[in-house]
Length: 277
Image 1 (cartoon, rainbow, N blue to C red):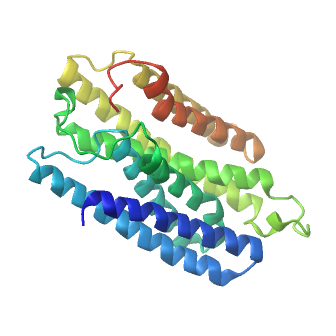
Image 2 (image 1 turned 90 degrees about the horizontal axis):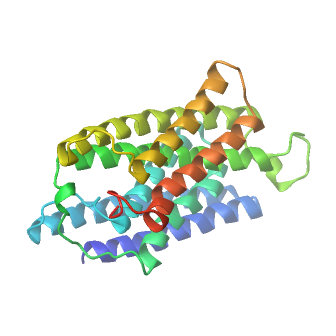
Image 3 (image 1 turned 180 degrees about the vertical axis):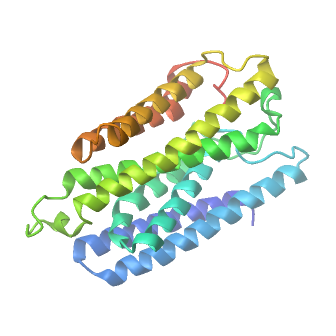
C-alpha cells in the first residue's frame, strides 16, 4: 500500500460521507448524519495517513520534503484542513446539518486532485526556490486560512437558502438560525484571516531568502493581498460598522471567489514565480 492508494480511497470515503449528510437532509433521518460524521472522520484519518506516508516516501526517494510542493499535494492538504476545521465545528455546535454544505467541499477538493489530468500524484524533487524551511510554515498557515474561508463560504450559502420564517415548510427551514449562521460565518472569517495574515508574512520572509525581496508583486502575491483586503473589509464592516446578515454573506462569497482565483486562476491564467504551486 502506498500514499496514492490511500489518498485515492480517501476521495471515495469523503464522497460517501457527503452522500450520508445529503441523505440525512433530504430524508430527515438523523441516523444518516451520524453515520456521515463517522465516515468523514474515517476519511480524515485516511487523509492524514496518506499525507504522512507521502512524506515518508519522499524521504525514501531521497527528496526529503514535505508533501506541499505541487497542485496535487496542496489540494490533498486543503481537503485535510477543511475536514479538520469542519469536524471541530460539528463537535462544538452539534449542528450536523452543516455537513450538507461542508462535506461536498472537502470531497470536491480531493476529487479534483485525484481526477484532474493536469495534476500529477507523482512525487518529484523540489524546485530550488522551494528548498526552504519556510515551506511548511507558509503552506500550512495559508491553507488553514483558505479552510476557514471555505467553511465560511458554506455558511454564507446556508444564509441565502435559509428562510426567515421559522415556521416555513421549506426543507431549508431546519437549518440553524440565521443569527447562528451569521456568527459562525464571522468566526470562520476571523480564523481564516488570522492564518492568511501569518501565511502572507511567512511568504514574504521566504521570498526575501529565496529572491532577495520581501515583495515582488508576483500575481500570486498580488491576489493574496486582494483576498486579504476583501476579508479585512468584511471584518471592518462587522466590527466597526455593525454590519451582519446577508450583506456580509455576499462579501464572504466574493472573498472565497478571490481565494479560488488566488489558488487556481493564478496558476492557469497568469505566470509568475508561483506558477509551480
